[in-house]
Image (cartoon, rainbow, N blue to C red):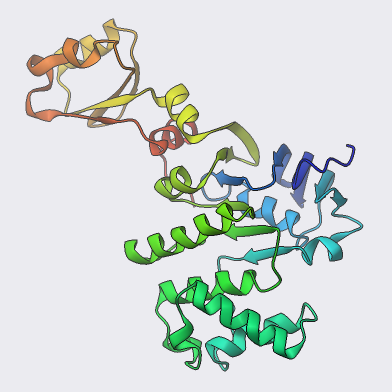
Length: 307
């Protein structure tokens, strides 16, 4: 694989093994400058294992991985100096104030004391926490903590930000606040690689998505394209379907999923599905809605619970 400055990340036939388990199994993808790429998949799909290889935390087992055109195996120190990482866990120092957490972290990147303070104050303003700069991090809400972790990931002016489930556990207001900051970063040309379990988050933030399962890539594409290709334009859900409904489903070629107490039909505009099934079959048990990324996720990865 040749160096390609058109790509921030270029992975080819990437493999990560833990003993006999191939957590990442022959994965290839690219990330372009200024793009937001999302990795989706159930627990254990290989998302976190993939991004940990990208920021040099976990060595690759085989394959090729370049970040900024540099080989992660030999140039990981230089690569890590140009990226910011927002991990799942909150690993802020509880004994330090909000401002001190940023200032201390800045020293790892050899920022001078004044530069570290100036940069920290700028970032606290960016995440709307300047009024809490002297508070201990233990006094912050969950949403504030996640914004502070994001600010820390930006302390070195990275060209690439890696976010592992950045809004897990946050309430809707906190999630939207964080989304707005991420959109501002992308508008300023920063590339983003993220994992998430929130399909609305992926649809809003990501230019392109990769859906993984069992360490492999299932599909890749823009959110709207994936929805249209794998779930159509709209969905008809029928609760407690009777024999007449089941005969209709069996007698027509509409894409469908049959569950224990529900049948889901996937339609495209102009196919006449809703008119065909009509009030006679649906009555008050029928819901029509737009197809979503969650429909794609469930259709391709299944509906069973994962450990």
